[in-house]
Length: 300
Image (cartoon, rainbow, N blue to C red; front, top):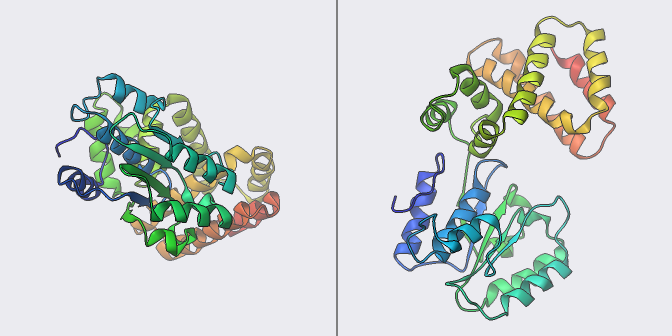
């Protein structure tokens, strides 16, 4: 690699991006697609830094600093705020797009593009068809099936995936040689191959401590708790919606780990499928307590 990406994995995708840059074969729009927390947004941000820096992405100049901190005038970010992207938002992008450019490129980083309403997506599509010179859109999506096919047809799609647990463990040891081996193994388990999630946990001790606490709770009631204990836990869990996703994610990862180890694989596969179903219902705002109670009943 020519540039210092400082990213775990995705070497094939990074090589393609570097080739486009070095061969002056840049597309006007890139769509980085894959599960959440695999590093797509990090790659998008660093790609913008490479394009804007005139000194081979030096990480030291004012431009690199401005892009990294989100303060570069010609690198416009639309961060995922969990709200839909409406047509007025796209109109603001179009307005910024038509302003005079001061930097190497006018770059738009738009996270979770599937948040666009139909009207917004159609308006954005028109801009993709005829963007101003040296304007580049770097888009991300967690669900490419939710993106309009007409948008997909006008961008360079790059697929990102989770890495293997073994590879993630190895890279975390290299990046964090002073960390305890047990912590690295737990982070690999919690992250389940999602490199962005792994780095975030390693860099945030408080969040990691919370994950470890929930992990210990999961392991405890999987081994010892009866149905009454589990229902009591669910009652407490349902009062803290922010904790539910972490709980279900760790529970799923623990059971998937057991499947890979060949431990009661058939039984755990059935439970993991029920966990996936529960997550779908939770995202649809179905009665949380009822969903979690049914999930507890399915645990062996």
